[in-house]
Length: 285
Image (cartoon, rainbow, N blue to C red; front, side, top):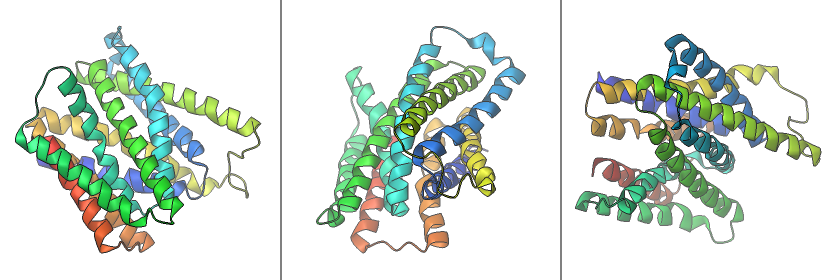
């Protein structure tokens, strides 16, 4: 059961990443963040009401509020990076977010084992290989790498904050709901300021209503992934669940290859693979 739900998590996260990156090629990234996270907030709100999650409210929810402030920055950076592409490089690099909780553990007195040290070294090497070959004379690719690293830092921060925001499953749903409500509020305010400055929130042809299902899917897939990961972690070793769930970049890369016909240079593919291997080593260390 752990393997099934963890692999379902990687599938859902991978497809959500692919969908978000694809939508950002049609919509402004901030619009994608606000609309998709809004859909997620509605669903999570319904879950909180159904499970009585509001009874878990307390001072810990301030961590969820902080996560809600960091989340839009991470998502906006990530979706912009995915839009610049290639997705097969951007998505694996984003898994470096696991380095944030590891660093927090070091600060609190934990000491990494040899496997974790190896994971850090491999992941850094992966970043250099995946981004370096296209840095010369290719500002777009440099921007994509930098945005991905900002996103990874933001995602890692959110993981740490959400972990502190709840102590139970119902509390987790409440924390995720609060996080997304704050994210929508912050993203909506930023979108409003952007529109006032003359930036359009919609494509030139107006709002393409045909994209509503895709926008909703991105947000709902993210919510469902959080749920399946929680089930996986409850029914088996967290290490196994984390490693299998961390395979989501493979799904994104395969979707990009299948639907967008992306082709990577050998050194880029090797760098992306090393970043993913480094993440797995960090998760299992």
